[in-house]
Image 1 (cartoon, helix red, strand yellow):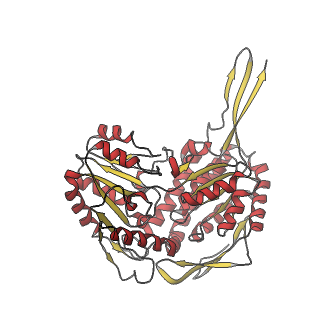
Image 2 (tube, rainbow, N blue to C red):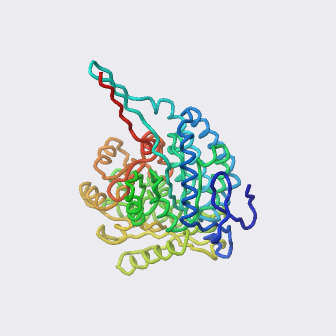
Image 3 (cartoon, rainbow, N blue to C red):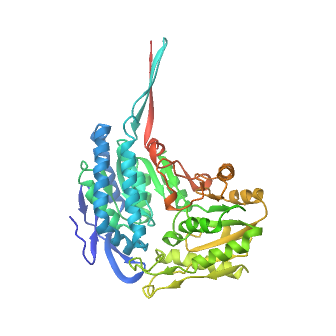
Length: 481
């Protein structure tokens, strides 16, 4: 088994074994660019084919394993993930750039997904039966086959478990492609989990876009679970269309937060700020635009900026850091271009917080708040995916709702008020997969809530029974009497 050293060598995981490759790429710490964390295999379509065929072979027997036994294996996997967190969370920090508590949260959420999914298996496969004088009908759930998963770098552990748990629970096998920007800790955790599963049930192939395309287009893959950007999802859909695969796509967001005129500013900021700058704003359902009543705009914006000015940006293993660097050069260039473009548009762009001494050689960006910006501007319509957020003044609730819905995205959203009933009524008018009232952060997630987006924020749902249904077919059987 691979042991953690200064520089790791990470191969593909196929049939329980770490397979070597002809080529490797370096993974560097985004907060210490001279620090090589690992050398990771670069796969080929041939590697994909080998992994998919292994998973397809394993599917023939794995699908027959009783659901109760699969549930127990998920619980064992959860224990393995928990046991690995102390060792692997610091490693995850060094590859994805988050702070340590964020990496630990990633592992904890992943554990929770495994446990919750296992708890739902009891009656999931019980057929729905109709029996009358004319016929007997049984509607049964059956697994699809080999599932492909493609996951990003921002929260790789939980985003993997959101696909792996329902896939394995329902009798499918899996081939996973991690992001080349954060493959190391995830692969080591999956290697340990794979050892409790039959050979071929869980496989990992590393690589770039060509590997992803080969995986999602492979004729033996019957299900694709993808989390990532909307533009990449279009390529995934095209690649999967050749064999009409089932897709679950959890994509980008431009989540609005509507502050109502009765909101308690201090209580709102206590919770809201956790959903703006966690992971340096690099979360799909982070708060990305904030609508504030014009009558309360200045007071809210002043309080917001005062809180943000206390933040310190530094390396993720620096205990003094509020948040760490952006993950990679492309993301850094994109975010800094958004900031500069917004500044050139005439909006008031305020750079806040401070950099710690540990923030001296990486993709560090201090938090930015944009004031006196109109709704119909680029900063409010894009998914900035970085530590910059606009505050937009509105005149009435109708305008706030209209502006919140004026987006091609529809992942998450939130309403902030001291009147719970008013908040619930307004929440029902927002076009999104999830709307939170008086919360909007990682703490808002509840595994009982299906998670996913509307419009160009995705197809399908994850979490709970809704997520498990994405990995099964309904087989209807009718006996005519």
